[in-house]
Length: 109
Image 1 (tube, rainbow, N blue to C red):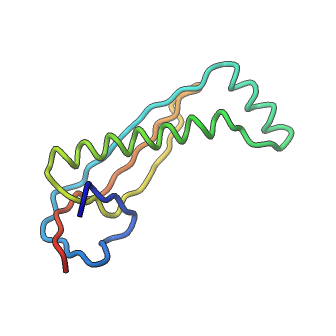
Image 2 (cartoon, one colour):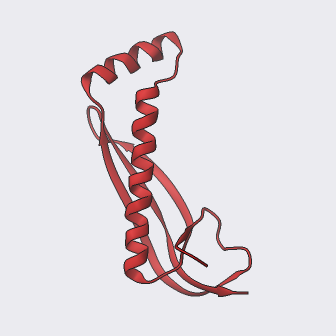
């Protein structure tokens, strides 16, 4: 198995968990500028989608995944199972993205 697998499931097909190494998380805090806040507010009123916010959320997800992957590499694991995203608003224009899961070592079944 190459790299670190991150999955929302509680296991990996064809692999057995041989060691549970603890809960780890990756985090990102992202902000939006005033112009995109105003534009998003207008789109929300008229029923459109806010492309600028969607891009920022996607960037936050990618940063949280990279952060989680770095923690997993530091532990020497090959997978993170049971991964879940959480999003929280942190005041005006700030969004906290958290990805957490269980770091595990696996072997072929």
